[in-house]
Image (tube, rainbow, N blue to C red; front, side, top):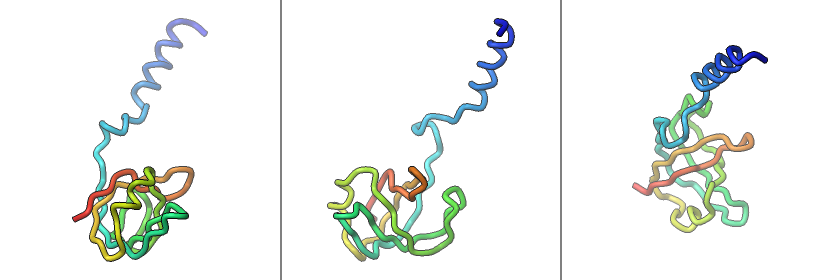
Length: 98
């Protein structure tokens, strides 16, 4: 591969590379905790719709990225959270109690 083609390829990769997580605008979802299952590492949340995650207003089970999140939340709590799909599963990446 010529140097010119390699430079063009690297420039294209740089232009279309995803932003680091810290640079992305984080989408926060509001919801109500229905249940917490520490043994499964799952929180069931009744939440608003989120187009980026492809979820409608519904109740879904979310894994947590950090198990300590399970200790901070109880059923009935109103929360705001950031989530993403990790290995195809909805996963909470940040959690804030309201």
